[in-house]
Image (cartoon, rainbow, N blue to C red; front, side, top):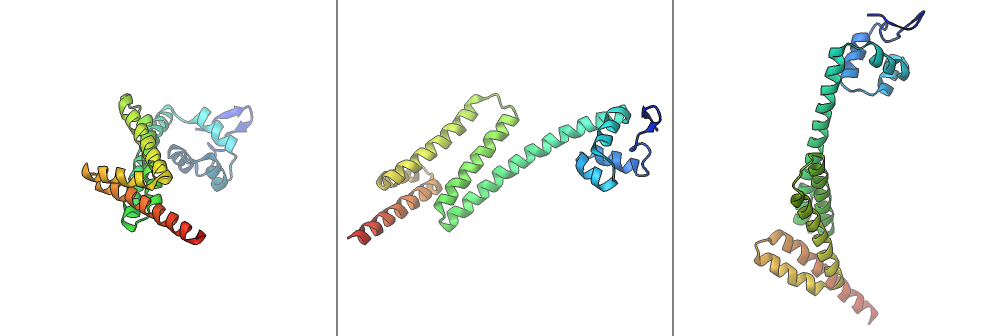
Length: 188
């Protein structure tokens, strides 16, 4: 289907020997830039071709492919949250407290974005996630300010069955106590 944009000018995509491949890659959401380089056509030509010459069926398929891309993005966000969860657990096993805290924060952020993208209407879920992140940061800061407070909170967490979180907090408190003790020993 060769179509003219202006009298006397043929669409370079319609007349391209690899038109079907180009259209299938457009349908697969390849960037105009990569297609331009690969097939030696301009990005503008690709855009004009899509606007002016693609059939209604192909355009409809492109729209449904954009829905699939959204699904892919949501899946990637879920994967990021899961990876952060795994990193947090591994960091805990290795005793890397600060890394575990950062991984936990990354997990929370990914989950929050995921919930927002899914348009979760239940604001209580989002509020709980935000409150949990704020609480974790506040407990971490209070522990840095006074490690004894961190040890007391760790004791309460352990009593509530939250042994992993208690371990993280207690390790942070112990490390801070050691650092303070070492710093005091060096100044004396």
